[in-house]
Image (tube, rainbow, N blue to C red; front, side, top):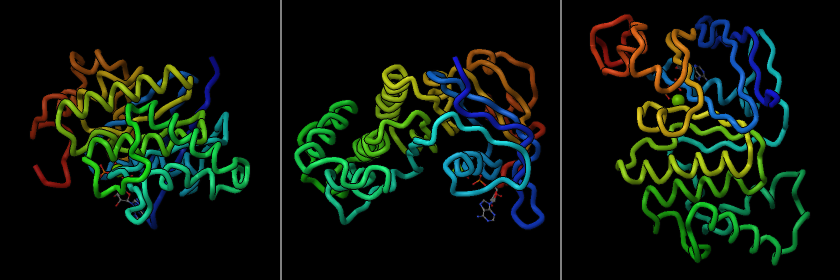
Length: 243
Ligand SMILES: Nc1ncnc2c1ncn2[C@@H]1O[C@H](COP(=O)(O)OP(=O)(O)OP(=O)(O)O)[C@@H](O)[C@H]1O
Ligand SMILES: [Mg+2]
């Protein structure tokens, strides 16, 4: 299996603040890497660099495919567009897909992608008519509509109840198996780490302070991972909420 995502000694600064400090990581096709860490530790910055929204200051980035899908924090659906138009958006607007499909084909693709995330016949509804969990699933459908080989999830289960979280976690695993994409899941949630990830890295102040398998995270005596897993105020990490 080949690497679809590779960071080598990546550094990213905002003004004088070093947000990613010499980060190396890789994700192979069909694998999921969870990135965990407190608020402000640089997790979203990693995703933004991969998706081309930001550029690193130094270090190398290799991407084995340029078809990248991102599931944004808070679903980020367009409120004024119905579900069909939200999902078909990339196919209508991205220049590599524009005019490739007829309206009939678009309808079929949208229907199929909605089915993949367990939804049917909601094409005419608007985001405000859906629950948080359904919106998340619609945002998944929107992301996979272009069949990306790299899928990035920014806190996909944040704000969801435990059962809705499980549904989303199952879809992340399902999509991985179906598409063989390389995925990165940024999350704070232990259930999401345990259910979806093959490997985990933990960031603190721009550095990787722990990496291992999801199960190892539960038993390691690494002080950073221990503090995170057990939600301890005492430990090497300070949150932005203070100690
Ligand atoms: N465009 C920007 N300009 C300046 N500083 C930024 C910018 N984007 C992020 N930062 C800073 O970089 C740091 C890391 O941000 P990032 O969004 O990657 O954190 P995060 O780990 O995703 O946090 P959270 O869990 O709150 O989403 C933060 O201190 C943030 O304030
Ligand atoms: Mg973030």
